[in-house]
Amino acid sequence: MLKKIQNYDYKHPTNFDFQALCKLIARGDCDLAVKQMQTLATEIDAKNLPFDTQNYARNIIINNDNCWLGLLHWDKNAATRIHGHPERSFVYVISGDLNCTNFDKNSLDTTSSKQLKSGQYSYNKGVEGRMDNFVHQINAEQKSISLGCATWITACNLTA
Image (cartoon, rainbow, N blue to C red; front, side, top):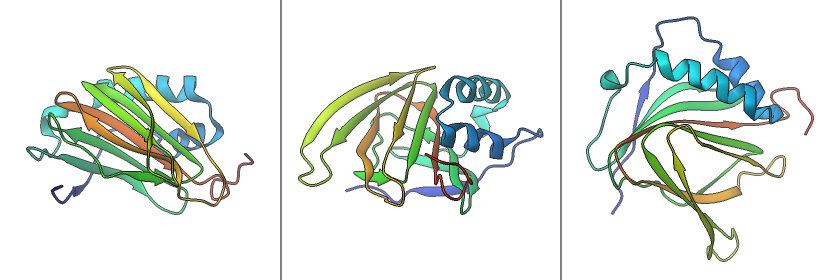
């Protein structure tokens, strides 16, 4: 049985432009987004992030009509439920190893699996206005930290 996921507000000590990061991801500009995430990763004091044993904790940076952005602190073997995302989704592994298993959204049969190691990312572009894009489950191979983002193209005033 999955444990309840704890959500925490993330307070960043600098003036990092998180909204700009969301817009880069919404546009699919992954190279620039990763560079910004690498800069952010050097500023994160990971030892002070809330942590939940045998689970993962979400440290919410932004949660509004444009995007959801959060730092996820994973314990070894922690896993998400099977879930989908809006138009754009992005996960960047700051440290550790995550495994992402993709599913067919109609049958929930496994379609593929990908291991993401520290410094790697996954970007997915789906159908506008739907929340069942990129149906997947993520589990941590080891204690890990990732940055996750989901964006809504129309809310960011961008075109797909």
